[in-house]
Length: 112
Image (cartoon, rainbow, N blue to C red; front, side, top):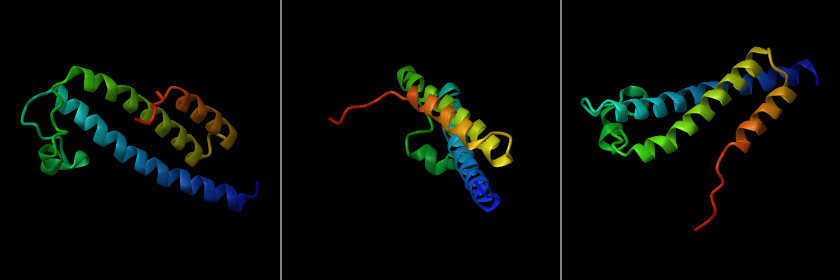
């Protein structure tokens, strides 16, 4: 692959890294808010008071939190992979294989 294409891939990985970082922050804030009943506010990363009003700020159901934690772990792993790709420390092939391994841990859902 030429240098220009490699830079395009690294740039796209950097954009994805930012988006995954936001997703991870929001999900982690929701999970922390569920662990700490406090005020029910989850902070700006998760939508602030608007997010709290949306019902996601407090998760009183342990089963729901148990379902969200693996997603948070997968996002964290994908974030690590995009970091490596954006920084040039991981090859596209290595990231592709690792991302497939992460995808294999995703539970499959059938249409209802």
